[in-house]
Image (cartoon, rainbow, N blue to C red; front, side, top):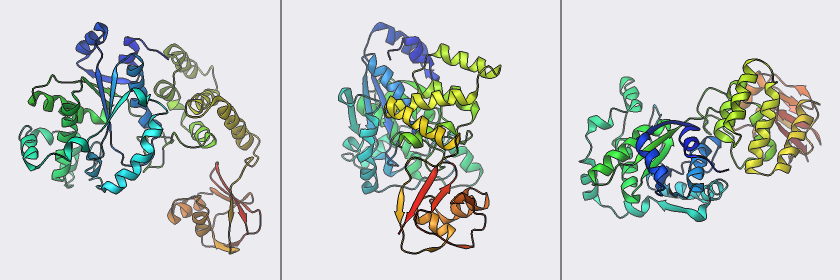
Length: 395
């Protein structure tokens, strides 16, 4: 879907520095080097990550050169943006493992054949201690400590490592190494993006324009979408999982998800807002359309419609899923938390105990509320956790 310059600078965009300059350059027809960096700190890309990737695709469709930087060097340090404590540093082996899945996932959105893919280890691995002296001498410690994340930590007497202070300088130098004209990132990246402008000036380059994009709340409707918070929707999840998770988002996020994650025109989204406000439309119907749109983007239209039927079967007709994954067990007597963990229906026993206490676990349609009690399972016993997780037992 092609976009106009006006749409390019508006949809999902929170701030542009310098807007007038960028608009003038875009109208001149000059082809820009548009930079975006991503650290492979986890193996999965979720819908929150797709917001900048979709914006890059718009620039790419207009003929601009996308420079995708995989931060295989900076990922070993960890970006302190929007964090109230230090991120655990990753080993090169962990980063390499995560990177294997990154490009195939990004290729679902960007045309990688037309993308300049760079790894920042290309330049940082060759740099020595003298380069670090040179780079760190260009920015004062007071300037780095101005960022909100660090100020919050200082007030709470939380530690800030020297490595974290150096991180924004390294990200800034990526812009020097790639001669970026424009850098894109979430609003939580504003400090790092501005640092790119400062570092470029110090190396006698024209400062890049920057574009900050909206941050996506997760399925809980409150916190930023994150795998660690469990409120994410991965782009490689099955159509059924993806559809079900989208249907679970709060009504307040419907139009934001449409705007940031789909190609539905702005006029239609504005009408949705008015219809929702005046109760002229059932939010559930809009969510169903949203789920179809997103599942179609990352799978196919046929799979989206199939996922919709399966969702209707489970939630409207209160039936079991068409396919329930089977697990072979040796023992027949189990503590429920142990059983849920064995069947991979929870990530920990504490999560299992919490779900059981809340009445979120059923065994053959019977709600289990005592997590200390041992139960007996038999062939074809169906275990249900929440509304969407099912497992069948085999011996």
